[in-house]
Image (cartoon, rainbow, N blue to C red; front, top):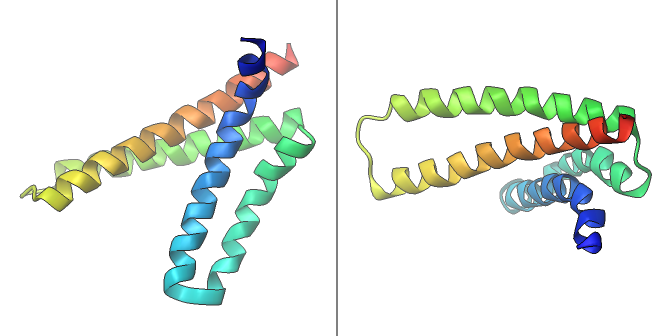
Length: 119
């Protein structure tokens, strides 16, 4: 149990690194060399794994809560404007909803970790 508790604080960073790597591979298949700047988004998360910083952790958490809140609003507005629901649309809604919720939860988890460390 101690092992799980010890490494659970790294889950949000590993999640966002995985999302960035997926985004990079998807864009790299379609656009080629123009996808490499996407990897720069992973630097703050890698830095948090190597040398954790309370300020960076809190600012990453707040930033991604704001972005995730915007994604939730965009997702809901898109969901309510759909007229017909094909199988592909339903699949997109399910995967998109899981992605949006996971982003929000991971951002809140980062903020929780920074709050626990500061007290």
